[in-house]
Structure formats: C-alpha cells, structure tokens
Figure (cartoon, rainbow, N blue to C red):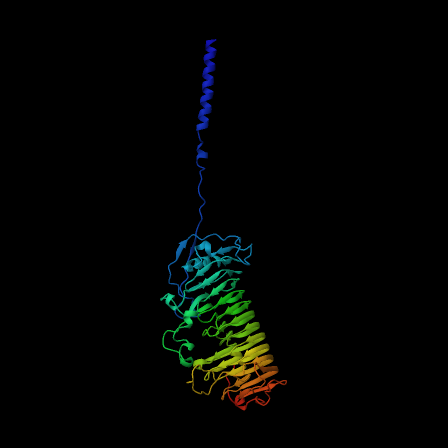
Length: 489
C-alpha cells in the first residue's frame, strides 16, 4: 500500500513540474517574432536652382548649383483637407505642409515647396496642394519639369514674395519671382491669392512717375515678373487671383497651347509696367472670362506670337489690350492671327492698340477686334507706329508692316482728351487693308464729336461709322508697298 502511495506522489509531482516548465518555455521559432516599427524608404530629392541672372537659353535648362540631398518624402495622401478646393479625391495629393511648410508669411517655405514639387510632378494625376488659411513666403525659385500627365499645382492659400527690393536675396535675379520651366501638361489653379507685394518696387527712383513730368531718375530698376512660364506646352491657368505684381503679373515665353481662364488680376492704375498677361514667342493661346485692372496693358502680345484668341475679358482701369510694342532696337517682329472679341474696356488710356517702334521690320497681320464695348476710354482704337517712351526717338525709314486689321462692332464712349480713332502709320511702310464696320463711339461727356486722325492709313469703312472715317482713310493700295520688298512674315 505504501509503495502505491509513493508511486502516485511521484507521478503527480512529475505532472506539476511538466505544466510549470511548459508555461515558462518559449519555442525558438516564436521568439524571433518581435515588434518593429515599419520602415519608410525615402526618395531622393534635388533642390531646384535659384532663378538665373538672365533668361535661360532655349537650348539649355536653368543652371542647378545646389547640392542634391536625400530625405524621406511624405507619402501622397488622399484628399481629406477641407481647404483642398477641387483636388480630386481619387488623385494623390502632396500637401506642402507635409513637406515642412509653415504658412505664417514669415518663415521661408521655399524648400518645402520645392520638395513637394519634386515629389508630385513625377506622379500621374498628382496634385500639389497649397492649402487655404495659410500664407506662404517664397523666395525667387524655378520649378523645373518635366511633369507627368494630369499634374495640378493647386493654390487655395496665399503665396507672397519677400517684401520689396531691400528684402530680396542679393544673390538672386531681381527680374523674376516664380518661374515654371519646361512644365508641360501642368494646370495651375485654385481659389487662392498670389500677392506680389509690389508697392515698394513701384517706388524705385527709376519708375516713370518718380521724376518730373513722368521722367525717370537714376538708380536700379530691375523688378520681378510674378509668374513666368518658359518653354512649356499644354498649360492651363484657371481661377486664381493675383494682385500687385512688381512688374508683369503673368509672362509666357516660348510656350504653346496655353489656356488662361477665369482669373482676376488687380493692381493700382498708376502701378508702372504691371501688365496683366504678356505673351512673347508664344502660340495657340486662349485667354477667357477674366477680369484685369492694372497700371499697364491688360494683355500685351509680343513678337513671335500667333493664333491668340482673347474672349470675354473685362479690362480696366489699364492701358487696354495691345499688340506690341514691336520692332524696338531695329528688331524683326512677327505677329499674326489675333482675335479679341466680346470684351469690355473701362476707364483706360487705350482700348485696342497696335504699337510699333520706328526702325523695326516684320509684320502684324490677320487681326480682328470685334464686339468690343468701350467705357470712357481715352484712345479706343489706335495704331501707333511712332511709339516712343521719350521725345528723343529719331525718324527712321523702316517699320513693322501692319495689314489686314478689322474693327467690327466697336461701341461705347471715349474720353474727349483724345480722338476716338487714330491711325498713325509709318511714312515708309503704310498700314493697309484696314476694315471698319459698325463703329459707334460717342464722347463720355458733352455732345461734341472729335474727328478721327489718320496718317498714311489705307482701308475701307464697310458701313457708316460714328464719327465718320470715310475722309480719313486712304483708298486702294499704296504703290510704295507694291514696289518695295516689304518684310511680311
């Protein structure tokens, strides 16, 4: 009996020992599974160089003198930001705040924008988001493509530059602020504001209003263009507000297939050289449904530009809508196939204008101004082939040839300080084939009609005009043009 009890006690002790051992023992295969934080593998980013001292040559990109750095890139997020505007929920969104931007209008957010640009432009249908409720300070910068299809730079907040010449980086070009270079397929849009903070630039001694009777004083004069697009195609700019640029608000150089739609540009009437949109060597352009008021041309069309359609613009106060100036410093200029229609010009120095310097060459042709309403405009219709910023310009025998220009259904009122129609054409190269139809321009004050002024202008009024222009235009075609070898583009 005692033997059985001893055996049972030994067996029970064995079972207890086995249970305790198994609870303390961890198999080797399980011991290898322990917690690690997931690793995020960074992508290499390259800082974009500061703007060059001069316009980058068409054959080469802007120089990049910065050192490449490698840092983790935030992953694109789905659009859950209440200030994201129209950014698609299905497209990857690269919010500049995720790349280190602060948005207090004091901290320098340039590098954060560059990093966001480098990450977003490489992703198809990506959106680089500048969120609302923030104000971002950016130094002069070049944003370089290429961009993937469907890339959107969406501005919902406010973007500002350094405040005036004294705050501008001394090593940086003072002729441009934000440059988009080879940014094909890009859309710049949003309900935000780009504020150029131009007031201190406008007061430089060199500006026209600083001297006596519009003269300039000595001193540095470079002032930055707010937004410049260079050698880019298939561009869209939509919905933005841009105020108070130091110089031009938008400038397109060597671009093609450009649409500008539903934007607002605003600067004081006396702000110098603040053109709204300037085109140079740019073609296949549509400018639509926009409101522009500034201290210079609402739209200016420079040499090498063609196939430009401008429609439904409210312009003024301003200097109107201009082709030119062309032919400065005896250069050759070519502009053709330009249409301006369904547009209102208010309280402006000029309405629709073609301006060329003496001594130039080339031609302006195939231009139509139609369905234009003038409201107290000083020079509603003007061709000026004696354009000169001083009184020291000498007479020259060559000129840009202006031909095939039509003015159709242009009505409204003019400032009686100037004639409502002026055609001041070159002595050596007359304007030809000017067509006027359904023109009715009345004085904004009083009842006295001023007569049109014509010089060496050939054309045909297809219907009665107010004021009458029949006795002003020359009939037929000038023999000097037929005999001479006119440099028509």
